[in-house]
Length: 437
Ligand code: IFM
Image (spheres, protein in one colour):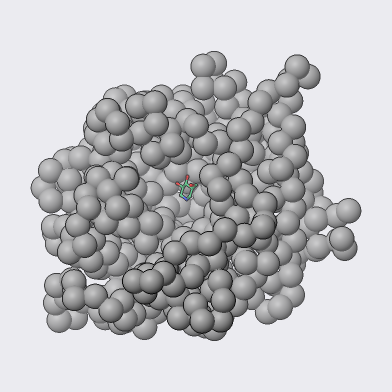
């Protein structure tokens, strides 16, 4: 393999999300989110795990920032817990909650680590869910109010604002399939929720432009790469795009929904599509795997297996898929600045007698995907940065603590952190600004 170098100023980071790492679920004025409620309901999460303590990041800020420093991170992507800042979703601001994020941002800046904020990574305040949640159109105003609270509190210290993390996934798993909070399985609800999420994105961007003219605004869908099993299955590729990332990116970039060939349509009021299609400055892409599909006898896509390596989640490892995906995005929406806002792999790690975590498969995964990122840049993709998912092992939604994605191991009994071999590999990538053999 040749050395893979990146442009100067390429941003190397790692990512986390509030509910997955913070813990301190009932402290300093925070109230429940839909994930607190969902995970405390028996049977929803493996081993009935909750994020009550998670990686206890709320109390371990200094340790975790020291780890980021040790790894040499240039940037840290994290999300704000809406119910920590606005426990009832809107109205009274919880200053103790806000102070936590002010401290985090100040400490990052003191350490020359650029903070990248995501406003919504799935922890909707339960108070809002009780008022209809994402199905109630008033949520667009509630979200915009929350965004404005954050712009006002941190706008002088933050350049990059991402409105929603994987809106295609949170809506699909939470409102269509029901395996994520709030556990709804209803096609009409799903369609309307997507529309309200998109509207909230657009209005939050517009509010941000008015308050912070120099800031950058974006959104981060999850985009896997889908291939047809045979040539006859090629229509599946477009179908999967339209139901997944296209459902987010086409309204945002073109002000129209892709054709999903469904009788279930959201209620769209006059002016909505203009509000959704605000100009944005970047897209974040969360990319993990590729999939192959064939059309089954009913005309629906069905996954086919491939003789390729997989992670412990059965996610196919195929770095070329990330390059192909980036070209699809560029060909569809234009050469917009892109950050890979999440990329990583889950494996069942063990701390060995030498006190280390020799996660060579994860290290190989990173080598493959980071090399692919370099190739994509050489092929003309405007890729500005890359964030490993995740900085530390954490609460992996319906999988609880049974799926580890960290480049730093967390012992959830003692909260001890151990940099994995993949973390050491990633640190070397950052030091060398690329993969050096
Ligand atoms: O842990 C999640 C994250 O919250 C969203 N993107 C995918 C990750 C791994 O499943």
